Structure formats: C-alpha cells, structure tokens
Amino acid sequence: MGLLILYICWWRPIGGLAILMQINLIRAIVSLDFSDLCFRCVNESDILLGAIIPLLGFLLILIKLYSKNKNLKFRLSFIDVFFILIIFTLFYSSIFSSDLNASIAYTGRFILLASSYYFISKIIILNAEEPDKLIIDFLKVTLILGVCLGVISLILLSFSNSSVDRLTIPGVHPIPFSQLIGFAVLVIISSLIIYKKLLPINIGGLVSRGVLLVFLLMVLFASNTKGILLSAILS
Image (cartoon, rainbow, N blue to C red):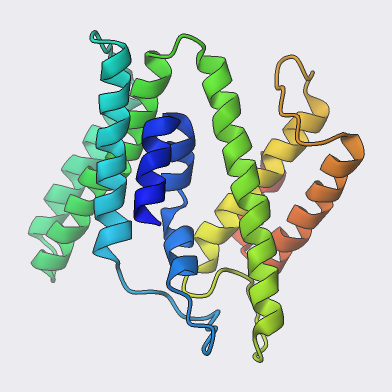
C-alpha cells in the first residue's frame, strides 16, 4: 500500500497529496482485524504509514515538481505567519509541560507533517501552469475517497455484531472520518449549484450526484460529529 501511494505521489502529485491527507483512514483499512471490528477503538501510531510514507511522498512530489521546473517559486504570505506562531507556541508551551518528551514529540510531528501538508500544497499551486485545474483534481480525488470510504464504513458496520453510536472506520476516531465526509458533501453541493464551467466536477449526471449527496449526508449524520455537521451547514 505504501509503495502504491508513493507511486501516485510521483505520477500525479495533487492526487497523491489528497490521498496523503487521508492516510490515517487508509492505514486503518489496511490493518483491519475482521475478527474484532472495534468502532470505538483508535489505532496506535504507525511510523511507516503515519510518518515515513507521507514524508517520502512529499519528497517525491517536490522532486517531480523540480524535474519540470528548476525555478520553483515560493512566496511567504500573511497566513504563513500563523504557522510560525503556532510552532513558537508549541515550543514555548513545551517548556512548561508536565510531560516534556510527549510535548516535544507532538511539536516535532506538527512541524514535519502538519506544516508539510500546508507548504507542499502551496508550492504545488504556486508552480502550476493551471492552478484551477489542480484544485479541481484535488476536489475530485477527495470526493472519490469520501464516497469509497463511506461505502467501506457501512460494509464493515454490516459485519460488526456490536451497536455503533458513531460511524467511522474501525480504529479511527470519528472526527477525521467525518471531516472527509463533510468535505465530500461540500464538493458535491458546490458541483450542483456553481456554474459547471467554473467548477467542472463531472461525477455522473445530476441524478447520480443527487444520489451521492443523499448517501454522503446519511453517512455524515451517522458519524454523529456535531462540530463537523455545524461546520458543513455553515459552509
């Protein structure tokens, strides 16, 4: 699975980035124990799929971009300041933490992974000949992932003998699962109400997209994550 993700990062960087953003859900599916589908459990950290594969994926994306454009550009903006302030805050709070090692580890994960997702995305968009097309591709991949993982979650639920209060992928907290589904819902709604030449997300016709929207909304409500529901409604 890791090698396939790395290949996608090289073959289609924007698609690889969309997949890497959902790596926690994907690695949970890979490590499923069908004899114990625990929807209330959270998997332990996975250094391979949780850290090494994303970092290698980012590196491959940068190499691919550099192979096409030797003069990669990057401009700092006002929003970038927030990441710098967050990193400063994490370092500062670590000094007063009751668990210094855990705080430093959390800060390191944020710098290596969270910041990387943001800055790699920015580099891809800034150096694209058609940035709008890349954004559309990212939304399409995210929508496909949302539908596929939503279907998988329901299939796994049908094999589970226990009652489930919050739908998710076994081993994953409902919030990241719900975030993906909520994002996919917004993509579908946007494709229905925005002029198609501005947002050409052609996932079937009007009826099929309507069916997908109803399905995703059912999964979103089944995830029972009130914050994500409110965010989706406001969005």
